[in-house]
Length: 496
Ligand code: CS2
Image (cartoon, rainbow, N blue to C red; front, top):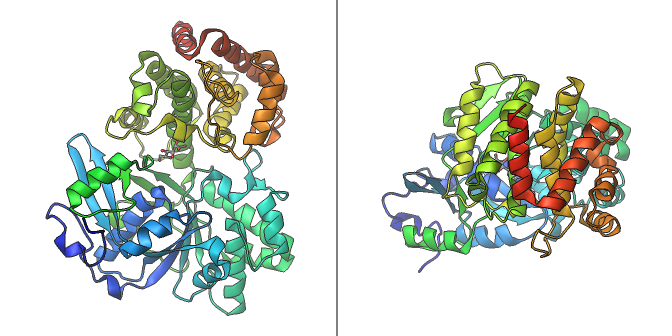
């Protein structure tokens, strides 16, 4: 079978959507840092719509800050790849042409800075995951002793981190008399634009206070809420796509029919008409971010840890467990919802119903292990903010406590059958050391993990209304296992 490429487009079967615009006439207007599956199934699809509508100023240059894998898959395909949308009625395929090519930053950092400083670039967008911003999740500030930050401050012309590249390129633009690009973060951080603005301006100020001030004054960092579930692509997915296309695609991306993008409309240098593709442009994104982070991602992490401990490979498998699905529903309705400022016009009940349906989508095969990754970067905005608001209101947090305890049980590194758990986390070393010292004893492990200040801050470990239920839930998980603990929690909380 031949490989997907510009030349192969003409031979694609009729049912496959493909670029109907002149790709050779496209100008690159966006550089995207972190060209993983999520960007390709989300923002790139909205931009594809703008290109297809005839505005050819918005081609995307993708950049990987770490591995060459995406470049190696996409460049031989002229940047083309397939988005496979898996719904109840079958799978719809679209070949997307918005990404012209991909470069690998560590191979040639200067090439990326030069590309970001090009006069045609108006937007630099990012999906570098939570840990890619090199910040402290509890305080949302730059982690000044992060090894990549230390490196980039000492070697500003050959950066490694996202803040390092952004500042190097902005500095170059200022020196050339060019307007700055808009920095568009599309990661699941709270107040993501503001958080990234703080991190980037602090990094710049450490290099040169005047540069920090200039970025603070001149650069727009709009907030965004991004939502689409995009599980990692498997070899079975590759085969299914090849069979449907009649040509091979080294890295198609798999996703669901649902897609949402809420964007703070602050783009001094212009933007594609993403609204025409369904994005919601607004002045206030934060209520949407909180709603999504706490309801979707908070539930996701809870499902991931409890599901994995219960032997469920995917989110849909975990949702098929009556206890786990009742717990998650209770978490959303009883503990999260009262903490939310509902965005104007949003129908929270319908939103929650759609989340449950999306989690149950059996076609997606979203692995609990994938979501369980990087817990130290995710828990603060997904569960701990909700816990703080509940405690402030004097309200109980039993289900949140079980979610947090399930993370603790998971990072103890051994599953309920005694097999090792492959814990992936930027703090994996520290987690391993803590778990080894504490052993499988909740009264030692829970307080030791809660001393990780970048996750729990200083307030939560000092509040017995938090430490009590978390330690009790962890003790139950060790003593009785996840399934029984979930069922007992559901029964107890239902009695009120
Ligand atoms: C997931 C998210 O992997 C994870 O941590 O919770 O990637 C989730 O699928 C997306 O935020 C959905 O929009």
